[in-house]
Structure formats: C-alpha cells, structure tokens
Length: 518
Image (tube, rainbow, N blue to C red):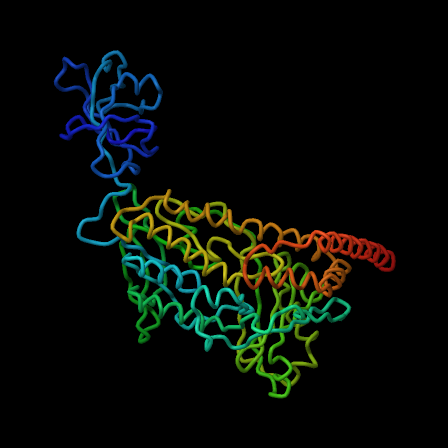
C-alpha cells in the first residue's frame, strides 16, 4: 500500500504528482463514489501516514490508482469493498502526513538512553544541534570492565582533555602461549600513543559536556518504552529516577519524538523494538593496586596474553591505569569458566603484579556482532546496544562514541536543527554511512580472530607475525587513526608469504601435539 491520506473533504489547492512517491505507510480516510454521487463510502483509517511534507496535497485519478494495484483493497466501513467501475474518473485529494512536518512552538524532543561514550556523544551533538535532549543514565559512577584503550585520533576528534588520560602507552608486549614475548610499538612516532582511560572518568566527562550544551541528564533506570501506534504520537518512556536519598527510585514518564538506544549489550531499548539477539562475550576484569616499584614497569606499557589457558577465543590483558593496573580476559564460547581464565591471566603476569591488592572486580557482556535490526521507526541503536565491538581486538570505546555522534548528526540534519519531525529514513542515513565506513574493519578483524585464535599453534604464529616491523606499522597506523592504511605491494607480498609460512608451521605443530596427546 503506497497511499497517503485520501481526503476529498480536505480543502486545498492540489499539486498534481505521481502517487508512487507516497510513503508505504498510509491512511485511507476520504470519500469515494461516482462523480454523480455527492457522498460515496467513507474509507477506513488504517495507519497514519509517515512520508510527505505537511501541506503537500496531490490530485489523483482513482481509476489509475486501483488499476495500478497501489491502492488499498481492504474492506470499507460498513462491509462494502471498493467498486472499480464506480470510481472511474473520480478525482480526490491526497493529504500529506508527518514526515518533515514543521514543529510549531517547540523543538524536536529526543531521549538518549544510556550515558556511556555512545550516549554522551549523542546527547552532546543533539543538544548542540538545537534538539531538546534528555539523557537517561542509571549509574552516574558506573565503571564498565574494559581495557580502557582509546586511539590517538579520538583525543582530537572528540576534543578530550589530556587530564582524563591516565597513561600514554607507547609500548606493548604480545605474549604467546609458550610465553614468548614480542615487543610492539617500535614504529610509533614521538607524539603517538594509545590513551588509557578509566570509563567512569571518560563517561562522566562526556555527560557533563552534554549537559553544558543543554542536554537534561536524568539519573534514572530506564524500564520500558511504549511504542506509538502512529507517526504523530510520541514514544513514552518509563523510568525510575534516583536522587541519592532513596534506593527505590521515583517512577517517571517522558514523552519524546525519537529515541537513541545507547544502553549497552543488554539494551532494553533494543528489546522494545525487537532488534534481535547477538552472540556476546563475557569480559571479566580486576583492578589491582600494585607496589610503586612494580607500577613503574607499566608506566607506558601494556601486555596482551594469548593462549587457551587465558581464553579459548580472546586474550588476557594487563593495562595500566592512573595508580593501578587492570587485569582481565573475556570469552564467547566458554562463559561459565570465565573466572578460571581470569586466574590463568593473573598467573601469567604473577611476578609483575605480585603483592598487589584487588580494589575492584567488574564483569560485563560484550557484543560480538551488530544486531539484525538497528533502527525501527524513530528509534536507533548505537554503541554496544547496536553491537559495535570489533572482534579480535575487542575495541568498542571509539566506535561507541563515533556511532553516537553519527546518529545524532543524522537526526539534527533530518530535523533541520530540531525544527521538523524525523522518521526512520533519517536514521537509516546514519546506518548507511556507518556500514560503508566501518564494515571492512569489522570483517577483517573477524577473519583474523577465526584464523589466529583457533588453536595455540595458531596463536604462536600470530605473535610471531607481530614481531614484523611492517605489521606493527600497518596495525598501529590503522588503529591510531581509524583509517585503512594503503600498504606497499612488495611488503604486502612478503607479509602474505610469511603469514602462510607461520600458519603452515602452526598446523604442523598442531598435528604433532595431537599425536602426543593420543
């Protein structure tokens, strides 16, 4: 069905155009009948129209509509169906609906659910763009268990102050299952580094900046969302707000025109729009305060451990923070054993963190791929809620912040700085740009994980490959600046040959190990 509201009763100056341009959402509300008949049968309202700009009106011929098959053929009020012959030559007016409708006396209202990097960035961009913005976050001091690494480009792109960066990592150690360590970072320039942040610090900064730009921050737990039955009605959000005095919270209701779901891997917004499920990893992390002399070792150094002892499909890490280290691991395929893998990670780094005290324990699900549906109606998902975490590396902070900003930019543009209504097509513009820009990155890292994380010999080959200076340069340049760096054809060929050689040796070693185990 491709018609807008048919309403001969509407008085307007018609503009002749093709009906096929109308939205697939429609209302039939006009009068139908032979030209000699003053009345006709009134149509049944099906759905509110969500396509044309307000005030656009179209003159059409009903016979051509019926014969083209684009007109609604459902029952008329009173049980009578449409009679094609009776409609021949009848001209009616097509009355436009919501999309692009200018908002009178107010701005577009958007709720951002979730106050992490995705939500904070989205709220700031929306507020700056003239949209009335509400940011709902349940725990304003939340500390998500993640390594906390951010690429250099994020510091400049998101105008982050240097004082929220705990450490500037310029060296990394990749440690194989057999404890062979490879130093990584030799190709970094003097001013290049990987930033290490605490999520509670970064998230709070982005939320405060959103508030400074006009966003209303609500300390509340999002509960559910009532989906409107038509394109003119608001989304109704139900939440419990907290003032710090009571743990129970006070029920609250918020009506908005659109919603940005930035509420993480267990997104309730995603469930509200039936966005579908995805595989997820469990990330487990302990913050350990170690003696100062041992902390000096991690001054600008991060460690990554691979092996089936620390994770069957991921890696373990030791990342430096302001006055402690974060030790953690993750897995998709063996979640119940996560504590066993965490213990193994601690044991691998035992000598370097010995004497440390665990000051915080954190665990959280991490998505493994984008959700089947990331936009529906006037609701869009960003960050972990959308599934934007890379395989192999597990990176998510930059992509969360970037997706939040890109989604908000699409809303600001589609609403003409908050003055007009938006619809799903505006949100899908963000998805189209996102997929075009980042899909190759996700695909490549997915392949790398499948190739190099499948066995210990393959992991040995991976660490061996990381010793190559060309690999380090290509990897760091791509990571730090989030661009696909063009390679040197000769060096690419050498890398391919060396990689194949490493994999052949890994496969041979796997076979020998199987013989020994038998």
